[in-house]
Length: 454
Image (tube, rainbow, N blue to C red; front, top):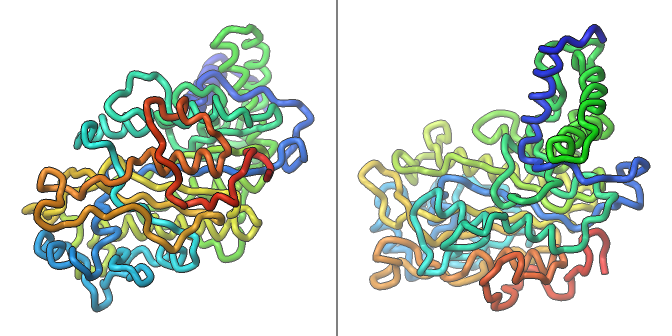
């Protein structure tokens, strides 16, 4: 492997520690005998949380196709409204008065199969509504609208109170991307992994027989260096364990199931690679409970894409939504082939919607109420939930936005209780009074445990 220089060691160690920056203090301690797919770490229900950063225009994702709001929709958006005929016509959602953006064909199919549900008008209570990206994201990810002072994220609090993370769970929480999101703030056993191919010390210094140069020497040295019990030592050993775990699982080499077609080019390529990583780890049945992904670029203040603009090379909003649709469809098909779609619930949402009226630059500005997407094998899909606030006179929030009619925490609370089996909602969402299920997850499919059916 060659001699290990001090410079190479420090560089490799820095790469490792940086790669696991979101892991807080290191991986959960696990028995040495725990193996992927073993009965002691069997796979169970898990949750995938996809955050659309930037504030997606939900009104053009799910639009009035006809009915009482159609005329106001066209009037407020003379250029960017979705059409009802032609190649760029919205895709009608069943027999409802609503349609899905024409680029979201995969999501439309999942809706038709009863696997995708859409919840109208989600967001904050009126007193906590904000059009600030930073505040809105903080409020949502902390799970405490109006405040981000609690110091932990709602997903971290779920994991802390679920009582369902056994020692054999190798990766109970996975943050896919460059950084762990605030929703996992305060959790120590989060693996923060972006690209398994580069998840090694000295990965950019060339390989020797397919093995990153100095990897073995670096990990041995790190184990000798970090032998104490303090925070830094725990982080160091956690880093080494994570590197060894990624090696053992061979995560970098993965072939999706037949029929799972992830995009390999375009704006959603990174999201596709991240979704494949989640699918790969979920299939190994090593105790995954929650996984997070971010998909940005939704702050469409200008040139959002006209309603007749079918060329997605010229339609930034349409291209990004098409990518999201393709990735979610591939992820569902990938896990469904292994019988794991029934264990998965995916929630997709954003910090807020956009204003109803298009601006002078044929874009949209910051708004409030927005749809949330809920996908999974046990989701009671093919339905629209909640109430659409309406687009006519007197129905808009501050005469500008789609009204918020469902607290976003109600959707997440149903997932936490009915899918993940955690009833400690007062800890997960402090100060929130849960009014009960919307029906996204039928009551006869509630699970008591996160790792096996009741």
